[in-house]
Length: 338
Image (cartoon, rainbow, N blue to C red):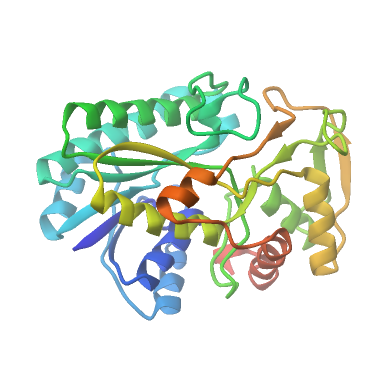
């Protein structure tokens, strides 16, 4: 019995591989290295003291996927593989629909052929769109999404719901992530973006270590306690543990079910900057810049359903998120290319 992890070399994927191994699962990992490095898995194997099969494969490659299912007894799939930059998705929508939606359809077809009908899907809070008030709950309407990346997540959720409705053997757990930050406490694995980071924490870390001159804070006139945007930041290890709990759930249930994975606490951009400076004793120069189109003032979760149904709750506080992010960055100033 093994769990296939697509996109297992990525930031969240690598941390989930480690937590799945720690929980006693056998894993098989697939990645095409589009936004990941082989070194991540070497470090996961070293930390876990275990090896596992790896396939360099694209989720759009049906024959490559069939080989994986032929050579391994796969009981469920944790599906991370996908393109993930909002700005890029606006410039390259067809690439996002092809890879994220088309790739997931191909994956589901091959899974069904192999008789494997359990998927844990890496979704996003972006599916809630801009019109729902926080805290966001799973029963709120989805779909009023403002960019192609978010729309691919929403469309895939709908595809998985339709698939489960058409075949009662299917189980789909839709995990709606909020804002993962932090890194494994060893400092051996973490977020290693290609080029200029899109996400706040790696940007802060690269400013703190001197790779980037300063942070741009987009907007200080929102209706929040300090004028900067408020988000629900969650430690990536807590997020990874949520996937372990989701696998346990999928193995015992059928149908489609969505869960928020967040802390339920909203922190502003300046809260994060100040917590990072305080936790690590480093300076983070920043400038205030104009708002970005499509950004909302406040977005945070109600994580109660995951606690009630999955028995999952985020354990790490903001200080731990900042400390672990800096440990990864300071020990690996060039990421996995050191």
